Every structure is written in C-alpha cells, then in structure tokens.
Amino acid sequence: TMTAVMGPSGCGKTTLLNVVAHRTQARQTGGQVFVNGKPRGRSFKRLVAFVQQDDIFDGKETVRECLEFSRDLRMNFSSIPDSTERQRAADAYTDQALRVLGLQAVADSPIGNEAVRGVSGGQKRRVTLGLGLMSDAQIFLCDEPTTGLSAADALAVVRTLRRLCDVYTVTVVAVIHQPSMQILSLFDNLILLSCEGRCAYNGKVADCQAWFENCGFPFPLHQNPADYLSDLVSPHKGHPAQLAAFYEAHQFPAVQARVAEALRGAQTPSGGRRDSARADADENMPPDGAQVNTDAAPPQRFETEHRATLETFGMSTHMWI
Image 1 (cartoon, helix red, strand yellow):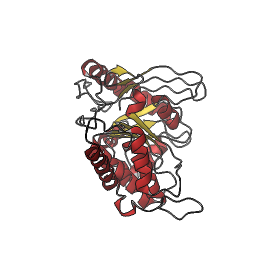
Image 2 (cartoon, helix red, strand yellow):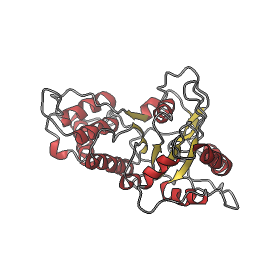
Image 3 (tube, one colour):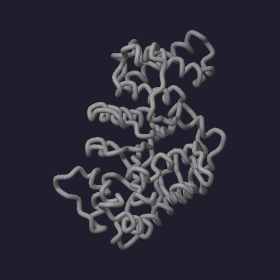
Image 4 (cartoon, helix red, strand yellow):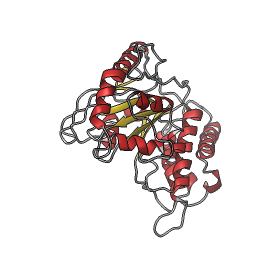
C-alpha cells in the first residue's frame, strides 16, 4: 500500500518518519514500532529503504552502473549455484527495475552533476528509488520525494512509487508537501498531522472527504482538496485542535482495534524477494457513525503503533500504516 503523510511545515512529518526508521537524534521518544506483529529488531534496517530529499551520486556513473553497484553490494543471489546463471539473474533483476522505474531510455546516460550534463531531476529522483530496490527493501520511507521537482516530474515520481507497490508489493510511506489532487489520488491512505503534531486523520484517501464533511468541514467545489486539507490543520486558517479531538474521539479507537488485531494475527516477515501479497488498508468511520468497525484487516507488512513524545515538537501520534 501507499500512505501519504501530510501536514503544515514544522508539524513533525520528517521527524515522524525518522522515528519510525530509527534514525532520530531526539533526546526523548516513546512507543513501539512493529513489523508484521514483531517489535522492530536488527533485521529492520534490511527491510527498509529510507529515501532522502537530497540525491547524492557520482555524476560520472551511468544510471545502470549506479544500480548495479548498489545491487552487488546489498543483494545476494548465492542461491543460484552456477555463476553464469547467477549473473544473468542479477542482470535481469536490474533490467526489470529499470523498466519499472521508467529509466530504460536513460540507462546508459551519466547521472550528472555540476560539471557533467546528465539526467533530469525527476529521473535522478527515480534513481534514488531504484537504490531501494537494489537492497531488496520491503518498506520505502520517502521524505518529500517530490520537493523541488516540476509538476510533471513530481507526478512521474509518485506514479513510479505506485508501480513499485503494484509490481514488487512493497509498502510505501511518503511525506508529501502540497500535492496535486492527481498525485494524492495515487495513494491508498492518508495520515494528516495538525500544526501541533497531533493526528487529524488516518485512513483511506477515498474516505477523507466524507470524514471531514461529517466533521462539519465540506470541501469547496473549486479548490484542490489537498490544499484545503492543509488549510484545515494550519495554525492560522484552520481548526487543528478541533480536528485532532474529532480523530481521537471517533477514529482513533478503530485504528487501535485494527493494530491490536493485526498484531495478534501477524507473522514474522520472511525477507524474501517480494513474494508477499498486498494487504487491505484499514476502514474508516466518520465521527457521527453509530458503531466503530473493529473487523480485522489482513496483516500488512508494516504496522506502526507509535506514540512519540519529542521535547522539541511535543508530538503524540498513534497511527496505522
């Protein structure tokens, strides 16, 4: 599945991603992160690819060389005894990744830097995603993968993330800043953080409009819904405290129930080459619903039950991804 994390600047989106990825330097954090029902252990780093905003490459390398170098360092094809067949399988894996990333046309072009003309910014960002594939990661945590890109390149990057989900059955969690509706619609789930770092919505993208209308905030007809959501949780234009209270009173119990059920039924990840099926995302219930739906969804590859308290942000969240 693909989950978008949205919120105003400074609300703690990147901090939340760093806490989940176990990369934070915060002095105080609390809570637990579970992977398929098990606490995050030493193998967690092998399951996760953290895609940063900044692209750091050797500009003289070609796209193919960059992916092959990462593959040879991080992937193991030793189960194939014959060396020729092993190399053939490794090359086929790289070729498939280039097709999924939409980079086959520039596979033999240099990546480029200030001194060497290379691929475009959007293509370079897709090379970054490819490095995650070359580690056989099952979870992609992306920190603003569309920042600094044109609208067309941003859409191409998110479409690539969508293909990664569909072809490799990976889980993607991406911090997205001011997405277009076309980009937001490519995601399955949305986590919306208020300016205080509290969760204001955690559910399916397709259900968010009905949720906020039931909260008393109908979507304007001629405004980008993603912009309107950002306004709702901003400190100056919106109602962040009210929406966070709605979430904690009405949606949070359903999220808790689903996380608890998944933790009871989940199994340890195998770490294989992307052979697990996609799981359904959680259902949502608007605040005026008569009941709370606690039916269990099939266990996902990545469940997070996390309450993080950071001295800088004062952030407390509990989410299901």
